[in-house]
Length: 94
Image (cartoon, rainbow, N blue to C red):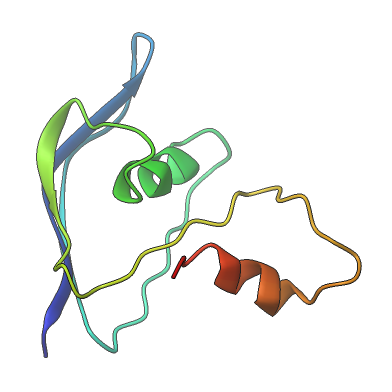
């Protein structure tokens, strides 16, 4: 299987608090991944960092050029005249 996401040594803090340190993983095409943690543990920060909206303090995120990424905020502003699927697909871009 081809690798669609490769993360090595990712570090991210919020103020003086370290949210995660030395996060390293690979996701291959076809895999399904879940992220579980308490509120405030850094899950959304991890996804914003992976999507390029925030910069890591250390580490490397590798996404092949042919892979499209998108980010749907935790509390999106939804249009009542559109489906959730249509709104989520919008986050992927062209």
